[in-house]
Length: 219
Ligand SMILES: *Cc1c(COP(=O)(O)O)cnc(C)c1O
Image (cartoon, rainbow, N blue to C red; front, side, top):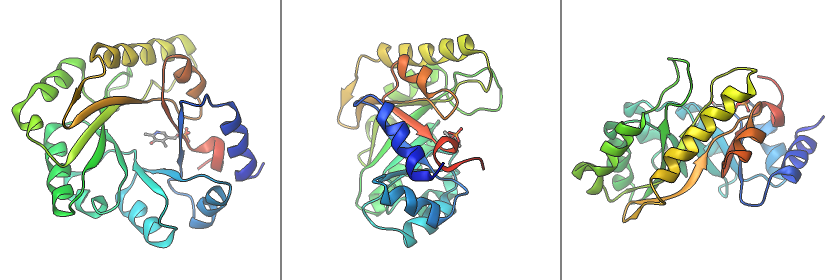
């Protein structure tokens, strides 16, 4: 199967309100160009330097999403161009993104990453940390970021009930915020679902799926 036919097959089955992020980490520019030429404009990467290199080489109408864990000292390399940062899980990181966005005269859209999986290794906040962040004066004063939603990853398991339970939990956290709308916060986006679990995620209310191997093949 070619990248183009994989992409077309997935796009054909996604509901209209669900945005597809083509996760292109570790893949070559020529692989990405195949997806680009098939119409894909949103790409997700998990390493800032790799994303910056691809940004330099590729057409400028691409929206680059940072889906991986972000180290504060590397934010400056993506601040000029990144379109959405999925993995924001602390006020400290948000403050750095705000600072670097300001230097670039931009407002950078962010998703707050929630910990919903059983594994200890996955990053993210719990609901009380989320509420604390959103209520803090420091957050409210940030003018160069905009929080547009939440992101989460389910446990890596065959157990569909477990996955469904975790996505449903994330959706309920999202719903509990009641579409919060302030100057720097407009909660419209729920990023959940990858190659193995995006159908379940969509049933549970996902509005953005991050799909890599089902488009580009195994890494
Ligand atoms: C790699 C990655 C994906 C895509 O995973 P696939 O299983 O290849 O679809 C999605 N989200 C995050 C955060 C990732 O790191």
